[in-house]
Length: 308
Ligand code: SF4
Image (cartoon, rainbow, N blue to C red):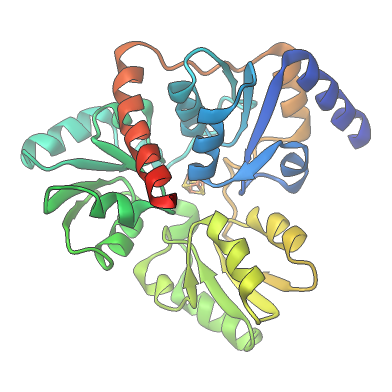
């Protein structure tokens, strides 16, 4: 077995040789986050992917994320270390299903969560992430919109907007199985802890939270909070970053089920192998890329404007 230090050194050497950047989602293994140039949520990773000058992007995440990087960077090589790392939520809405849904509700714009395939993005008017979904929906001229594929994020947005959403009934299996009973039990065990939940959790679970946010919004909340303990209701990979950025504070995962098997497929070995063999290259081309890019860029333009 090769020592971890040796693999890390190999990744650093290959990264330089290939002129590569490593992007990692907050749900990746801690050791993968440590070798990344940037760690973030889908919105932050999209922004990094759009702005990078690197020749190669190694995307430590799941398939749709590497697709998004390819859509935003057609001239760059995008590598996904494990080709099988997919997202069951993204698979719950196919392009044909979306076309039929649009026909059933003509004239309504389509807001698609970034957790979707390139083909689905190409059928959409604008994308959103959990961090900007409410402002994306509020930005629409229409009073009604189709929102998919995540029904829990849709319900969260519906409670915070005046627009009427017609919501696709998909869900993230990792977040959706957490129960309010588990939150109540976690609070009983840690009575001084604040509960932070991701909006992919069910409305019943979200109602128990002191703070609801995308993964990138969690660390600033913890940093500013006077509380010392936090119950985290999102995928467990985020604990690595929360602990690192907030030493002295304590974190408890609300449920043992909060682990996404797809996010955990990427290892240091697979990152090194991806750089060595220059695989697996994810390419979104042609007309699908052009239309998907419009939906993604419309979202990114909006989030840039709302930051200024
Ligand atoms: Fe998909 Fe959920 Fe895994 Fe994220 S945590 S990749 S939404 S299945």
